Image (cartoon, rainbow, N blue to C red; front, side, top):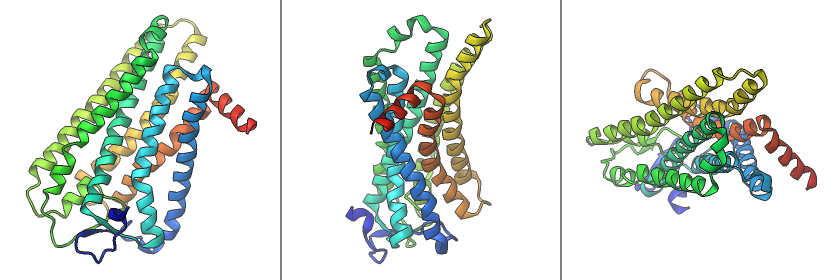
Length: 312
């Protein structure tokens, strides 16, 4: 914690300004931040607790939903506590090691989050296109292996980040106009050659996000082809309902991420506070909304959660 709470007067620290241009409104801005974070924690903690408690929910889609909830908690927790320290207590200092730690954990959680969404798309594909073999293909051990692969992939993506960032030649100005340490924001205050770092970021974005989006799109193309062949209207609606929740989560996650990434890389004319707000929306809003969407759209999960709440 000492790495995150040093005062800005220490020459070995960076200064996180919060949301540039809106410093006077930080206390008011902290209200939606806190609200989103509390809802995120309550929703994403409740889902794993209910799933592991209810034997009937020990199914692939709910186990994947637990993984998604854990990655959502990790993403928000990487960011929000430090942002609230800035808003409430004006604790803007963060060391280089603390900054790199924050970036590394966020990179790992983001890569895992994307991998879980791909796995959920595959789950929907098997459920609709090959329902008779669903339980034999997506067994609990295989779900555990897929979760482990997602974790390993996230760690591998984040491994080069600490050595690259620790070698950056930081200019005299150690002010980062952001609520948290972001790789692009840290690179902007560097005086050294950033060619390799920018190339690595581009390659990771293309390989991870590009590949994941391609696999998700391929899964849904096959799903749409299978759905169009269904003659029964009831079965047709049921197939669409099983996919609608996952599609909503994908749109929320990737839309906010792509907007934030494009704005940072190509939106030089966009106001700085807009950059920061978009970056915070990506780590706050989807993790908050995901459990709400699944709670509303998934009848069995909704009933089990209501049953547990009434029992308490």
